Length: 222
Image (cartoon, rainbow, N blue to C red; front, side, top):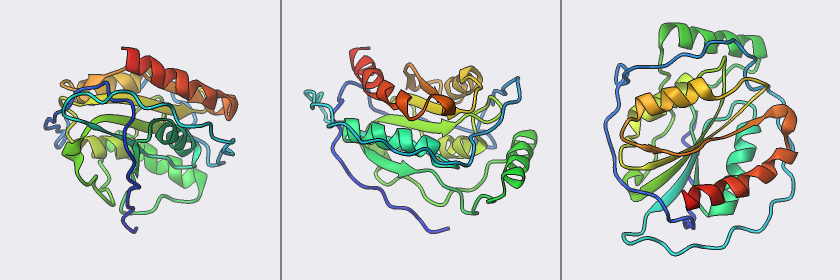
């Protein structure tokens, strides 16, 4: 799979901290698991509604950190949310992708996900974030699969230290919640400032995209 480059944009929500830490699980420690099986993010992409004007820039804090939207999306549903966040904040957008393409067949894809979860396998990634140390805020997005954090995201966290950074998680699912995935994120990144998460179900989209801007504003006030 070809390496994807990021579009660079200026971060407008300068309200968070800066730093880094080392994660493991092979390199990761203490992977949390979800309880209830739930259908993974479905392969039908969600139509993207007209995007509102970007939020007004806030005064950057001393030192001038940048923001990154890092997203893994199988079907395009979570990517739709990521693009809305990047547009609203002016953050750079980075797609988390594996070196091997995911199966197009839904059943084959879900079987692969189940194997990764059962075996604790961390799939290799196609690319790493350039200038990682320059970011103090990371909006981390992914689908919820069987109530859990996808292992491709665990691979990303193993290669990108979040200690001292602000992590703003967002996720999508067919119906399952995000509690176990959040627990896993906090356990894997104990030195990150993990903020309130945004979780949207597929059935609520695209209307629920209007929740993005209030969520971002709430993060800035926290």
